[in-house]
Amino acid sequence: MYAVSREERTWGLLSHLLALVGYTVIPFGNIIAPLLIWLVKKDESQFVADQAKESLNFQISLMIYAIVGTIVGLILTLVVIGIFLLIALGAVLYIGGIVLTVIAAIKANNGEAYRYPYTIRLIN
Image (cartoon, rainbow, N blue to C red; front, side, top):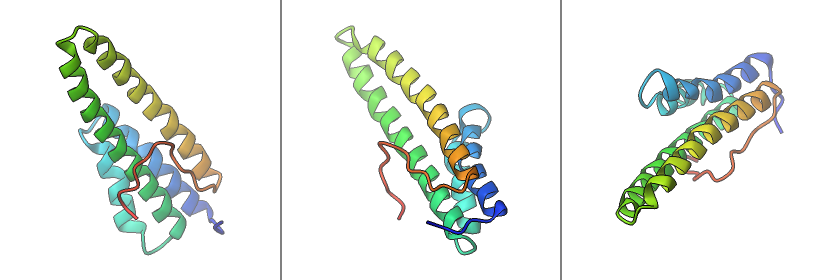
């Protein structure tokens, strides 16, 4: 584990919470915010770099899942059930993304390295 300072915990928290900006304010802010934190802090803190990469990987994974789900949903719409699948998947991804991001932020604020479930680790 890491010896984590208060400042590092705060940056870890921000690397997760600022991803919520993309859900409400800035398009792709959910990817831009953790990417910027990772780029700026990666050489200063192993903990912050780890948490920013984790947040970034999770947000990219959510976007991939949403795109694939949308495509599958649109195809299945031709068979009628797709619209229900599309709505359900969208709700699950949106609510799940917010809930898991808040959990990650709390863990990071406590100095714990958090790993999102179902995340494609694209950035190592």
